[in-house]
Length: 364
Ligand code: ATP
Image (cartoon, rainbow, N blue to C red; front, side, top):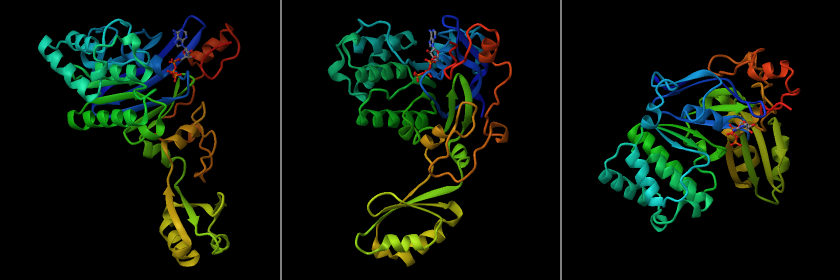
């Protein structure tokens, strides 16, 4: 599948403060995928997507949008890409209805079509009561919903959304993920989203990249990255009190069995052994003594927490039995880049301009 976006060796140094916000980042977003960009605060995610929108210029490297270098064809970016900024709206005095309508009209919809699209989006995002309210008077969550509506008006085939669910209540967050999934499924919209909401995003994201300190430390499908944490499953058991079932469980010698509080136990087993382990539990602890049994595999959050600044395992996941992988041990598909000796942050450090380089790429 051809890439819609190609980011090549992108470096962004904010001169003020000598901050290396992106450090030799390369990335391809494929047509029709939902791609999640994850990373700690200050990792460089917003800086990256702002450059992809051509809102700030890279220090080095280039970005191709459907094969065109966006620095040479800047007008094509807003024509092709709908964008939700982390802090949307320069024009605070527009009302909600005006903001959506004008964005659609500026994106080439006729006045009539822009009006129709505005009505549809106001209905979809339940913004009817806010239609005439100025943007500057919206709450944080309301602002985010209006930002989403303006990102979507005009039906762009590519969306870049910087923290689309930030500040939203659980019902609205659910609504956002469903709306994005539907557009991806029904209209083939390609979506790049920045998020900290890993547990929810996991149900939507098809590929993921993790950034730390301005660098890309892992890219892959969530399943691929999880597989690196080890092929284990956790069985969580709640036992019926008063039947001495915990003692029977401990006596089975099933490996990593831990007490997790009153009558609660967790047991880690290899995926290959799962069937046999459950059979033994039912037979020897006794199905009547087991009140609840749940299986838990690795989550995207486990993956996120497991990568350190150089792409190595930082801490073993509670589910992981594998030993830490170093960056050089990762094969194709891990896409973990061993830091170049001439990376931008190293150049700054070696240039003697500011001393120690901190995880955020900042020099102090
Ligand atoms: P968050 O998850 O907190 O939103 P982020 O991953 O989006 O973080 P960025 O906003 O891209 O991170 O910031 C990356 C680094 O660049 C941070 O250290 C930040 O302080 C710095 N930075 C961002 N914008 C500027 C700027 N205009 N001038 C100087 N430094 C900046």
